[in-house]
Length: 293
Image (cartoon, rainbow, N blue to C red):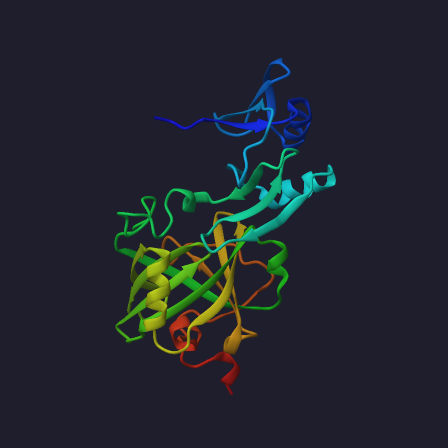
């Protein structure tokens, strides 16, 4: 069974056709003045309207249209004269949505839910998302640097807000809980080698709600930062901008396939601090950067 067609009532089908064409739907059937059918611009679903003498009372049906470019679409539609009751807003159910009404008062929601539409952290029967990424034991090889400027922000391809805490910061192992954007992870890292470049890492995606609970159990000093990703050559640089008690600290990391691998060093990368434990996240969680002498 596949839900791929929704029909809503209208007092004036011709007027509604104009509205839905502005919205971006493609008219494919209009054989008489009492009925019209559209193709959605993405996917295989269709959407239709039929004329009625009187609209249903009450709140009626709410129709959702998903788009990956929600904010851009809403801006374009507003420029074309479409009025919104709610501009794009992040919701507690992990969707971002905007709300409007068609000429007959039917409630429409433009939204982006991504994986959280079918696989929210609280999905029944699933402790983790069915699309969870589970990593087996790996060897992490990375080098860490300070920055000379924030010029990297203009080159970043994307960024994420990260909140992370530690259940243990033992020298032999750290256990980290991280929320990165709309994903959550539990990570165990072993002790680094003498040069500080290599260590064992085991990471598993966990339910968002579980991560929120675990963060409450973490040691004092939860870290708040934004991570920027910059693609240079065959590598991706990850740059962290810290907030709160670590405000003013910027760190850049690059992950390598082996310790001898060469890489391109951008102009905004400065002194290398690989192996310097002062710049481990687990260290600054208990020894904040703003308190360094």
